[in-house]
Image 1: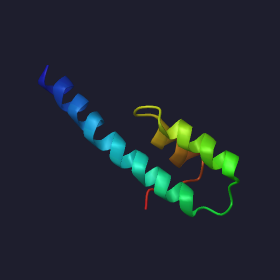
Image 2: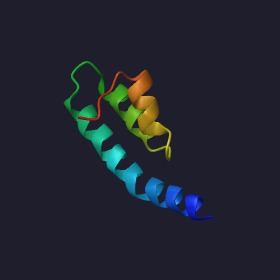
Image 3: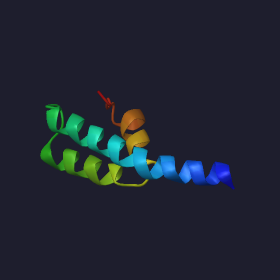
Image 4: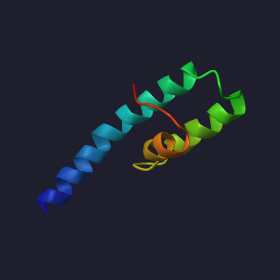
Amino acid sequence: MVKLLIELLLAVFLHPIAFLLCLINLLGRGDLTGLQKLVWAIVCLIWGVGPILYLILGNGAMW
C-alpha cells in the first residue's frame, strides 16, 4: 500500500515537470512544423506516457 502511494505521489509531481520540459524543447525545435509541435504537445499530455513517447519516438530531449 505504501509503495502504491509513493508511486502515485511521484506521478503527480514528476509528470508536470516532464511535460514542461517537453514543451520547452518543442518550442526550440526548428525541424518541426507548427502542426507537428501541436500534435506532440497533445501527446505529451497523456499522463505518464506522453513524455516517454516524445523521447523515444520524437527524438526529443529533456534538457
